[in-house]
Length: 311
Image 1 (cartoon, one colour):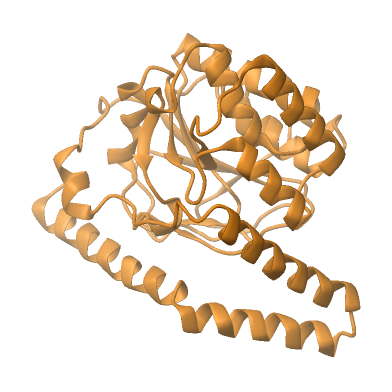
Image 2 (tube, one colour; image 1 turned 180 degrees about the horizontal axis):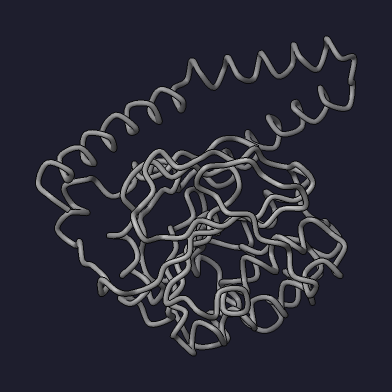
């Protein structure tokens, strides 16, 4: 990258940070809540109104019970530059996402790295100049559940991209804004062969499970059984948590392949539909710490290289 291109990327990221700060301002949050309620009233969907109020009540309960961790900033641009490294120039990189059931609306990257291949797995053909449509493999289709299909593809990059060196998974509501190449080697810096952001709000799966139940996420009964099993096995509180919104994989890492396979099996076995709760347990069972996972930052929602839209 030339000096001019570098300065352009930096300016783009700084503009994105300003946009993110605006979207996360108190005024915008209040406005979105009011608009959600108004829209629900217009459609006369009482269930929508009750869901909004339930989420707000749940948030207040969680904030009051666990006031310790608040959303922080991601790595500052200047700090991140100190740790920039690059993978070899001939490495093959696949960036991919999965959209099933029309859950998300896919956005084209603002900046797409030359030589990187962008793929979307979807049950409907996506029109894009950048994203290439790939058929959902039969091994995923037979699951017949959009959440399971998404998680299968998230946790099996080795099966869908055997010809690549690295894969970058992003959720369907994430837009790539800037050059993502400096992030890739984070997968090599850790001990696990993959890299993720720290969880933005919590560092304890027990607290996360309680929050999920209050928000109506996942299967409450199965989630309770899963958490009780972890407690009985001695899984510690405050072990740490990771965000599964963006994941970078070293596809040549056998350890990464092993951990992803175990994560998938535990995710299926628990049947709670909460993948971020199962992953710390798998790391712990393999005698890893959260710090052994490649580090992408503290807050994916404030990473200037991405924009994460609300579902």
